[in-house]
Amino acid sequence: MNTFYKNLSMWLVIGLTMILLFNVFNKPQGQSSQMTYSEFWSSVETGVINRVTIQGEKILGTGRDGRPFITVAPDDTELIPMLRESGVDISVKEPEKDSLW
Image (cartoon, rainbow, N blue to C red; front, side):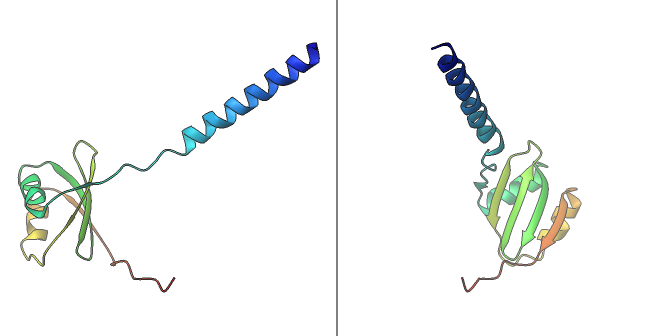
């Protein structure tokens, strides 16, 4: 019986270690909160926005508190100058293309 308990405890430790590693490395990415364009504009004006990525009509970004957000922007010629004036880090990506698959 002594070897049975040793084997059982060894497998329990291995199993718990596997579960722990799975939980550590399988953290979900931070969910982006949906923001209206008006809320986004106000946040830029008040200096809450830190960084944005413009991808077609989508604007993804983070606030100074590190929380991610997403919004959809109309064709606004004042957007880029306003972001620059507010000291927001701006990056642009190509719009995602629809896949056939």
